[in-house]
Length: 104
Image (cartoon, rainbow, N blue to C red; front, side, top):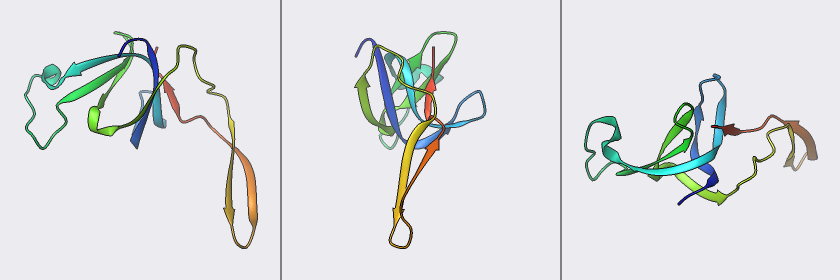
């Protein structure tokens, strides 16, 4: 895996800006479990994806990666249109903030 990817995670995470995100975008490097100075056991993830640069990156456990989309250009991080629906009110359109952390 080389290049820039949009990595979607199974769970929300906090970034250094204090916001919650569900995806990260940037250069990806696959690293082994010993990067923290310990060896994990079979009940833990044994590989990780480092997303971003050496100065600004997030490390995501392999077991938390849901999708990896090759994406050389920075994805849209502006407010996005979204929707929700229920039987009483029908479809409601609204704008939501981006859930993509840019690690560059």
